[in-house]
Image (tube, rainbow, N blue to C red; front, side, top):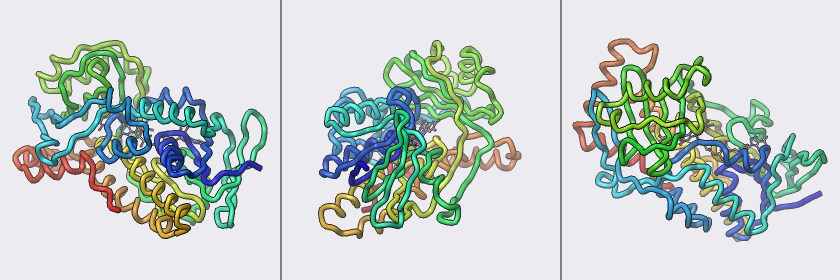
Amino acid sequence: MQRTQVAIIGAGPAGLLLGALLHKAGIANTILELHSGEQVLARVRAGILERGSVELLDEAGVGQRMHAQGLVHQGIQLSFGGQRQRIDLQGLTGQSVLVYGQNELCRDLMDARKAAGLTTHYEARHVSLHGLGEPRAVVRYQHLGQDHELACDYIAGCDGFHGVSRAGLPASAYHCYERGYPFGWLGVLADTAPPADELVYAQHERGFALCSMRSRTRVRCYIQCSLSDRLEAWSDARFWSELKSRLDPVTAAALEPAPSLEKSIAPLRSYVTEPLRFGRLFLAGDAGHLVPPTGAKGLNLAASDVRYLARALTEYYRDRSEAGLARYSEQALRRVWRAERFSWSLTQLLHNFPDHNGFDQRIQQADLDYLMSSRAAQTVLAENYVGLPLND
Ligand code: FAD
Ligand code: DHB
């Protein structure tokens, strides 16, 4: 039987970052990942990092390329009623965000892990967790057709929303709080110049739209779509035309359509598991909670969970104190719920809800009107967007 101190399930941003932080603290860890490294890197997902996430990546020693290639953004643009207006993140909060793709971040973490000679088993199948209430936990899995067992002190379930860590628990072990939304996001990645220097979030009667970016020559754009929409029905030409129809004229005119490099549909969902600890198992990132992507919080929450967990495990191995581990679930959930609230409210503000009537629509307009006329309201949005403090 193999042995490690912490077994990490999943090599997404949560698992890789936790592995890097534990290694820095001298804690042995092994990662088991269902897919190949290339498949993990091929996923196009989040792109906005809060300062706390940037600092954590620096702490893990993987910040070099992120600082060289990431774009510092000091504001965001809101497009509605045919106009574009700016929220001055820097002026309102003293902070900015960094535009850097999730797959680039994973690549940096994977490269550092490989250079340090740390063990990651890609394409690990049939992972199952045992002994969560025993003095030692065991992870069973298959790799290259062989059965394996990995004994460990603790398990970090970083295997995303569809992973086995949460799914393997009895339903009576946890409570889940959930909200579905009657729409999804259709996303396109393309090599063309962003239509503005900053991200443009658009509210329109045809539905929400977002022009984000990965660099000065690559855009990541999204439009709200129906849950029944199929990718085949969305040619590039239809996507660009629909996106432009939802933007103010200045932004629409500045957007030059280009062939899509990637196109995908993601449903929107809010979901929280409570608690996040089950004996020797700790859930972190999407394995424990989901937010709708509107506030760009998913990846940043995964990072803050991992920060709390890495500190708690470090305290355990350094001082033999379980105080941090005992506090993990409550501490992480407090920040999770604040991000849930923000992501939910920004989703309400900017999307077209099919079941909304004229009253709901007028309230949405009044919300936007108030936001743009009140520095206090803009400060609320800005301080949530750049990231709330890490409550340690
Ligand atoms: P994940 O990134 O999901 O990583 C989990 C890892 O575990 C994966 O590599 C997976 O292969 C592995 N795994 C799964 N099952 C097993 C198993 N049985 N055994 C071993 N390994 C397993 N956030 C934003 O802020 N902005 C966005 O635009 C955005 N877009 C998104 C689009 C999609 C389609 C999705 C699903 C999420 C998106 N998110 C976005 C959310 C953000 O990407 C996530 O919050 C972030 O990836 C969370 O990281 P994680 O490491 O917790 O989970
Ligand atoms: C991106 C995604 C988001 O959900 C968001 O709010 C901002 C940017 C992105 O993929 O770049």
